[in-house]
Amino acid sequence: MLDLRQNLKLAQKLVMTPQLRQAIKLLQLSRLELTDALQAEIEQNPMLEEAPPTLETVTNPDALTAEERKDAPEEKLTAQVEGEDPAKVAEVNWEDYANNFDSDFSFARETPPADAPSQFDFISQAPGLDSFLFWQLTHLDLNELDTKLTTFIVGNLDGHGFLEADLADIASCCNCSESEAEGALWLVQSLDPPGIAARNIRESLLLQLDRLGLEETLAYRIIDEHMNLLETKNFAQLARDTGTSVRLIKEAVKTISNLIPYPGNEYSNEQTNYVVPDVYVYKIDDEFVIQLNDDGLPNLQVSTEYKTLLKQKNSMNSESKSYLRENKRNAEWFIKSIQQRQRTIYKVMESLLKFQRDFFEKGSGYLKPLILRDVAEDISMHESTVSRVTSNKYAHTPQGIYELKFFFSTAVATTDGDVVAAEAIKTRIRQFISAEDPTKPLSDNKISEMLAHEKIKVARRTVAKYRDQMKILPVKHRRQARS
Image (cartoon, rainbow, N blue to C red; front, side, top):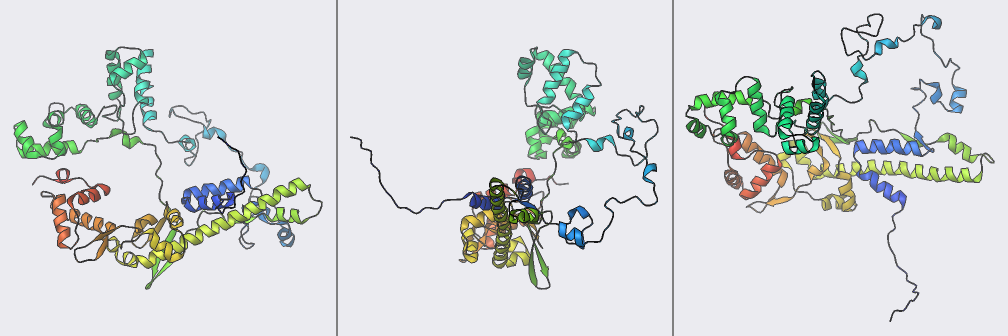
């Protein structure tokens, strides 16, 4: 029988306030995300603003506070161009900025100067592969069906320039026959770059050879009939299957190596995002110096004008004062959270420098096994905090730029009872492969034996796993024929 009762219970639990959630979120943001978060907070919190530069560096009078402006020497707020009468300053000729895509026609009445901005300076996004193909199609006299088909084909190309739809899909979506779809596909494949709209690498290479007039050559035959042997560089078997010599096979392979397997990559409009270090580690004399990277991060402060307004009596109603007080508390907490974030990054980097000093001195081959708990105990913080700090953060070191996660590595036992970091083993494998004979590349089993001679016991499958993580090809793809 069910019975409803009221019970009084006393319990302790951790309640995360919005401010605490914000501090944790700021801790794990990358540098780029932090910049966006700072800008968003400045825009929505009226009590938060960028601190003005010092009086010595102020060049804009509008940046001065009321008291600073009173003490500053009086000067004209609008400067005049030296040697010029404002009435005689020429107006901007906006016709110079017209989008003139035809070199034989100009909207300007006179030739613009050589240093005038180009119309391409105002394009918000760089033209990509689809824009380049559509531009070529506009110069062709296509009927309505061909326009529909070619537009569908171009819209179904991936970033490499390969077609992701088959003829049946094209015919079904465009309400036409497969022969008409094939004709439109052939039309797109005749455009630049050569090899575009292929279904796979093999077809792309064949299209490129056909464009070069090499469809009757040995190179075309190798790609068409023996692609699997070409991938493994089995030149001896290729020579036997084609009835030619190894010398001719090598000449054909040299021709193939000049082709572009992924024709669409050269027209990619994806922007390259470069890593900006969060912290720098310099070696000065025999000591390492840690410096946080604050470039690009605004120096925040609580608005002095609003604080003055809050202190004045009867300056605003109670609702407005309550609103400003709440935002003032949020602004102060936000600034403290940013400062705490920077201090934590510094402490973690300082601990990493202590544990991995040999790495900073000699390189990745001397990286020691390290886990989050070691650093957490060293700086008296929780492991989760250290994990958040090291996520998406980068350090500029004398050995290069590394993510902070890189310095944590699992331990692998050696035969003499010592331990070595997994990253150090990867470095050793990379060194073995870079020094190998290209005609006799090292197998994973051979690398495992070579590591065993250095008292590092690693199984063959572990070597294969580390090699895959470093994006190093297996032995059959690294082998080169003898000259």
